[in-house]
Length: 272
Ligand SMILES: [Ca+2]
Image (cartoon, rainbow, N blue to C red; front, side, top):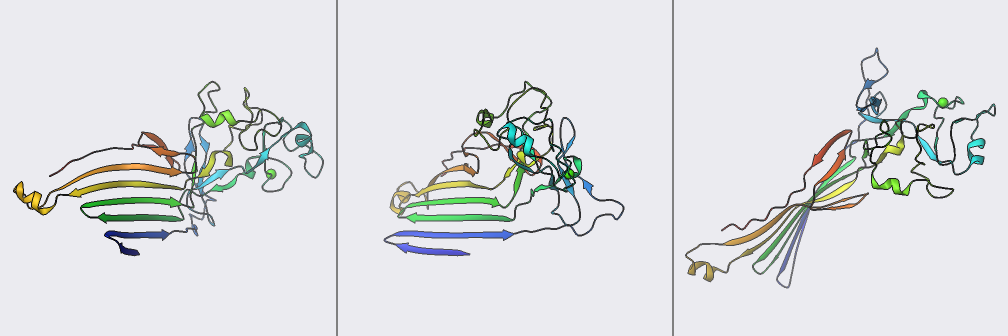
């Protein structure tokens, strides 16, 4: 789709495209319940699966329901027989969901906790002309997908953590998302795959910005040139995510379940 308009010598042209993807697996080999997928190294924690009725390669793990804020909440989290569902938990630990409702929190409660495939993928292009100047901005993005943020080392207790650990639970009411940090992780807050690690993967990136100036013809003729245009261009100028705005620097970006680094580049060209 596109749209163009001219106002007082300014010319605007906008175009964009968007696509929608939804996928559900309808068949896998009949002798198996699922196809295994990615693992969160180094302990080999299983974090994706593919199975019938689910999107391809969905994130796999425990669902959580906030953090225990005090001992009374730990004590009150019981099954039908009055037994504590998480006897090793303390205030500040993750409350895991008994997904299959059998009165025990165990591996059978792991389920779909996110979809790595974007539902929507889109691109935009804006061109603005004014007199001899022209500006082109090209952007692209996705939404409706999740990322698995496998940056937290649960096997190395003294390993560095990302800055969001500063917002961890430190007392009643301080956090409903990031659990307390303690040695040995008795509640397995970090050593279970759970939706604690899953977040929105939506982003919009300005892939390219280019500002150009075309010399007036009479000047070009003086220089014995037919047409001369100067331009500067910036690649991967800005990336907007749910976490931060990333500006012109090298950043690690997690996409799907595979970790890789996308280098943000800046180039400046003057061509004649
Ligand atoms: Ca259960």
